[in-house]
Image (tube, rainbow, N blue to C red; front, side, top):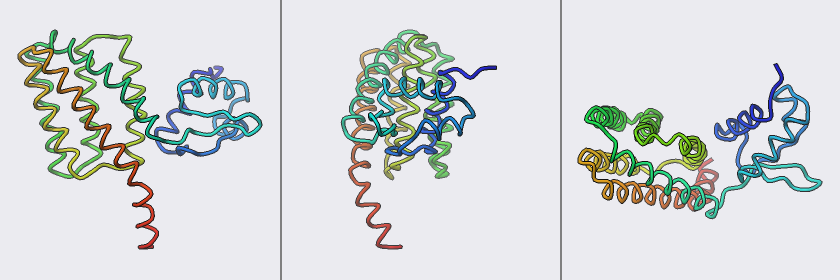
Length: 223
């Protein structure tokens, strides 16, 4: 079966998200074609699509590179994510059932057990499941792929720059307040909490990015 441009685009995106292709890394069509076992054409088309998403930069006569990370990129990601997640949580607060609320409580209970166990990978997975559940309750099938794509990119950034020590406790606190607002169908409160939740995440990620050169220098000094 022929490999489509979409398939190759997804594989390149997955490699960027996983860190296999690092932010700022130079990439060539030859290398990617060899890596994925395809001709140059689907790779070239996939890179053009990823350039349109702002994930890849194509430079004339120099090939392509994974984009570097700056505050403008993070601002743009969060602006889109916040607008969509606020809209989704409003819909979810209006539509949710007692069973939906019980499901969110169960996910949050698991998330907080993982925090207590310092199992950060499991915390991240449960956090994703918590937000996916809210978005499923909202039932906007056109918004879901956009939210999921940005979630993957942000997950890659968090993995690259790390988490602050107090982040997970704040996430759990916000989740409990979100569940409370949704349980009484308070759309306004749910949207305000979600917006604040995203704003705090953006500020912390920007702080982690700003600290990265300092952290790297300290590691070199200890080596």
